[in-house]
Length: 178
Image 1 (cartoon, rainbow, N blue to C red):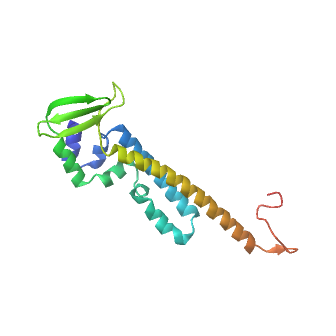
Image 2: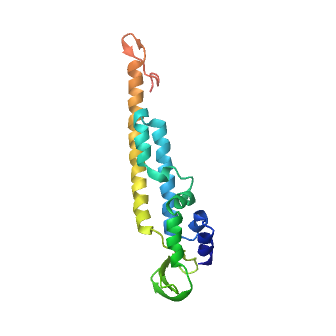
Image 3: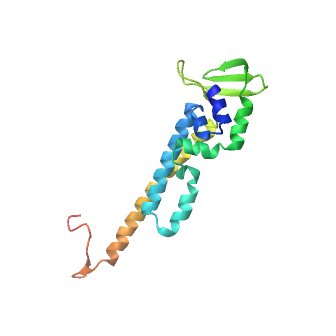
């Protein structure tokens, strides 16, 4: 909690990222990876007129440099202030499975998570919401890849139609053996 308090005091969301629970960190990582991969496929294969709206639909995950950067985008001053109000001297704790609810001297509750004994505790931060977003980002990536493949096929077909004909037949750019 001292590390979190320092990160909040320093107004450093990237540093604060290191103390959120590993489920949220892993979800943020996956979101960024899938959104950036989808953005790359859109830039490569989508028709020019469709690219801007398709890229916008990916949201901030496609623009973030990394998971810490996405967290920093989403956990600005208001978020840090909210987390800061929850951190304080520990009055008591309650274990609830892999969660630890910390009751502070400020009268606030802070929920922590750890996967198993021996691992460090991380602050729970939008974990369920991020898990759902991770699933959507993965599904969206698969859809973008399928669309990109369709656009690439269409482009190849349109290229064949535009290629010169020899003896009345269109040339296959892949050659006679495909």
